Length: 433
Image 1 (tube, one colour):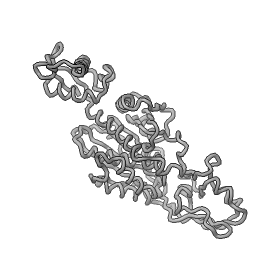
Image 2 (tube, one colour):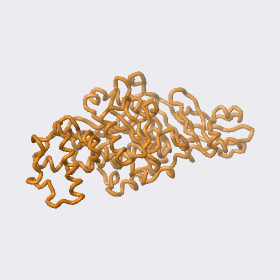
Image 3 (cartoon, helix red, strand yellow):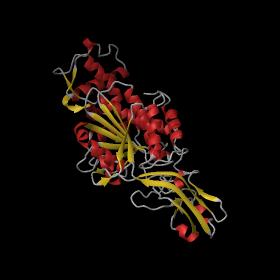
Image 4 (tube, helix red, strand yellow):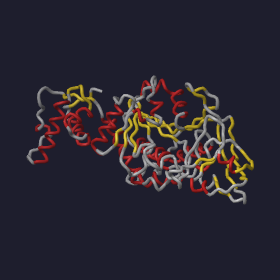
């Protein structure tokens, strides 16, 4: 993997730089903007495979739509001034707008304009994937000063048979059991709701590939909803057999508090792992109900699919005022916010890798002193270490995994890692699974 994707100690700045490069691209659920985004990600993840699924392909209850591409779009006022310009901000165009080159009255034009009266400086993000129409988005302040008269509306777009495009990276581990990481690449120029997910995921992928690993990692960069449905339709059987935990990575770039979206029943290994890390390190996180879902967990956790999928976010989608507007820009996110999200996902992956069920190998308490595990000098700190070790041993009965024991004895898993290594290294502890 390229050093651009994972720079130890500089992950935040590297992710922000990648986001800045990707930000101007006009992405959608299909089209050349998605391909360009994936090609740039390939520079840092050269093993990322790009897949194309033809228009009309049946994917569960859905069908892959026509491919949409746009070259230009604008509105000229009665004096010929360009008052709305796609090239200035790609949010100005309703996603999947059909082509038009026509002069119409302001009254007719208003039927195709979208603005936010309550956020008069923001351009809204609007799409129409499954009904053909055209439209423009602008700030409400722009809309209020449009003069009566005739306006030239121009959209140079194509909506035709093509493909849905997604990226897939498989990083093999020593086991065929998998951890699944999914993020989406279908929104135009928005930072937190769009690009924070791909850049954090790319950095995680590079780190995972650089370290020894137990699990195989299945990592996808897809269009939201139709992309996850398409991917599941092609891979569900193997995923249901192999995936032990998964993370839907979205809205991970701001500096606000962390948020958690559980799986459908909240009882999976992914739920247990994520909640443990959040409760240990980010106690002020906001926990949502699955009833408040809104991203690809809708597909991954749906009945019959039932993947163990959760989301750890900064501010949840829909819960910050800049969401789905031009205010979700590069100033909303930060290297520190991205790095914090990278760290919490990294902590979860480290825990998954170390999370075995353990059994102590002797009856009664082991004699720690003869193995050099009991301090010869009694201090306050040494007493804590011994207490944690003995408490761990007390619950290492072959029925509890590492997270269970950590929760039972109230000791963070990070403090248990060296204890486990020492006990295994001295032949006192066995992995049950």
